[in-house]
Length: 350
Image (tube, rainbow, N blue to C red; front, top):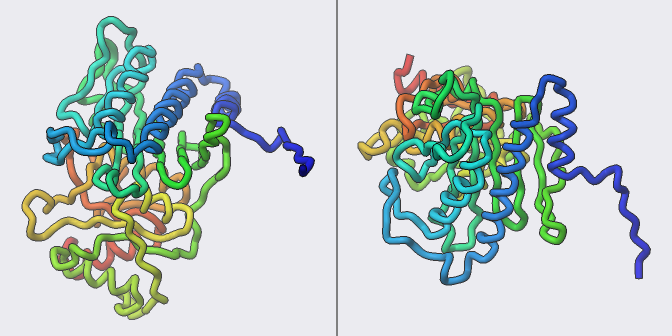
C-alpha cells in the first residue's frame, strides 16, 4: 500500500475561502459569507439529485409550463423549491426571484427581512436532463435598494453593475461552483467523498488566446447578416472591418448554456445567442437578462472578459421586467468587440 500524505496547507474548503475573504474586509458583517455558503449548500443538494437523474421519480416532465412557456421538468421544480426553502428563513434576504416563477418571491412575515436580494435560475439547460448532459444553476446577489420593509420588484430590477456577487454551478462529470464577489473569480470542485467544495481553480482568468466559439448554428438561417459574417470570421473565412482574417477556432456547443460558458471561461472563446430575425418571441433575444445575462457577465468581467447584447455591455442594461430577454455575446474581449463591429457595420446598428 502506498504511503500517502496530505498537505493540509494546500487544502482550501469553500468555507475557509469565504472566511479568508471576509477577514480581508474589516467592515464585513459575515452576512454575505453566510449567504454564499447557503448557495453552496443548495448546490450540494441539487447535485445529489442530478447524480440520480436516471431514476424515474426525478426524470420527466411535471405536466406544467413555467413563465417562459417551457415545459417544467421534475428536477426543475425540485431545484426551484429547494433554493427558496434554504434561503427564505435566514434573515439574510429581502426578496427573491426565480426564472421559473412569474413574480417576485417575498419573504414570509414569519421571518426577519435582510439586506440582500437573490435572483436565480434553478436549473439551466434542463431540457438536457433526460439525456445525461451537463446542466447548471445560476445565482445573482444584489443589495436591496428599498429602505425597509419587504423587498420589492425594484430591488430585483437592478443593472448588473450593481451586483454584489454572482455564482454558477455546473453539474457534469464533477460538480463545480464558480463565483465572484467582485475580487476575482474562483472555482471549487465538490468532493463527493467528504461532501465539501474544495478550491481547485483560484483566480480564474479568461485565456488571451481563444479556443472555441459556442453557438447553435442550426438557427443560422434566422440570424442577421452581421451575425452570419461574424461566425464566418470565427471560422477563418471572413475578414474583419480592417481586412484581417483570423485563424479559425473550433465550434463547441452543448446546448446547456452554463456548460458552454464554463468551458469557454476556462479554455477561452465566445458564447453567443443572437436575436432571431423571424420568430417574434425571440426578436429581442432568448436568454434572460436578470437570471443569465447579468450574473454571467459579472463573472466574465471579473475574469478579464466582457459581454454585450450586440451594442451595449450586458452589465449596463436596465431591466424593465423580471423575465426580459436579451441577445448575448460573452467571452474574450476582442471577440465580443468584433461581434459588435460586425453588427454595427452589416446590420446598420449605429
